[in-house]
Image (cartoon, rainbow, N blue to C red; front, side, top):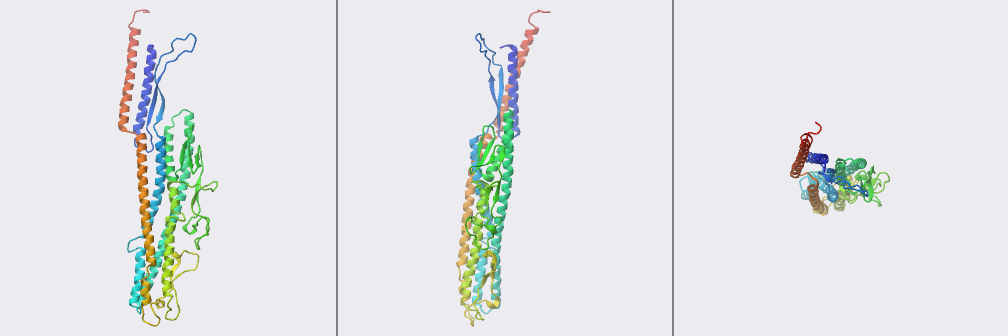
Length: 473
């Protein structure tokens, strides 16, 4: 190896170690950057050359080291595992959150709950049975009955408000989903162009990874990598993102609880027009884009025709129907003072849910307590003993509590699994300051050694050129 070839070798080593130092410094600088994946400088020896001729002599010797790539130390398997777990967790957490909100609106057990209102109403019948000729007791009964109907209506309205709010969240998330998908498509194009041009696209890939994690949390899907560096995102076998193109989705179907319909069935009376259940569709074609995971799928599960919010609203309707049927069956079985049999409760005319249309149909003088013409409280006592509505509501509340607890436990288990997957990925991709400190020292020493080689060769050449012989003087 000539002296000048040795100088070139030292120079290439200096350059390679400087690049490695810069990459290590980049890692340390981004230790707290969300989505950043650590990088390493890939190096290889510069081999000598050979002359492929008949009279070839030995080629030029090796002349140093070069950087071949800046490698992003990601792990496709662990990234896919984390996105899968994120998708499942987001769906379960959306459902569990809705169950928890439902429990809050019930206010059970408690003095402001509907169970307490039912107990107060039927206890009022006991007071009337004990004092059948007391107008004040009957007035209190009617007041408690009105309060009960208001509580049922308010509970139904709370369920309807939760349904409508969840529907709005799903629609808003579809908009966010489209924005994120468009951003992924744009990054796909930029990454592809950068790789074709031979530029480093690791930063762009990290940005895309963060967006892909966001897509997984919103809609799930499958990420497929292409040879040109771009990725496709598939939802139920259809492309949400394909290369540098994104395909929009939307939430169609019932916009409010009043419009909710089971697909393919005749709507219950008073529930609005047939728009079908809320669902995720492809905006261009209107065909189903049913997601297997993500928060959007969880929100749509919550507002499905057989979902928890619709079932809660149905529970209020059933309770209103049961209370009216039970009380009216006994109250109308005995005529009043004027000889007319009357229902205690009535539903207002119009296509409205029973929970909203239930009302008291009698006045204080028309309340029947027992045999007409007598100071009798036997009928009132029988009504006070009715337990069908109370048992029905207690069963509904118990079912909601059990389902909410089960949904919360599933969400917690899923989150634990997701956290484990995230920890495994971070152990591979996150920056370790201890490791980077060792690498920093290693590359620095290699740089100093290369510089020392260059200094040594320079001194040798100086001696050879300036201190050997006197020829030419």
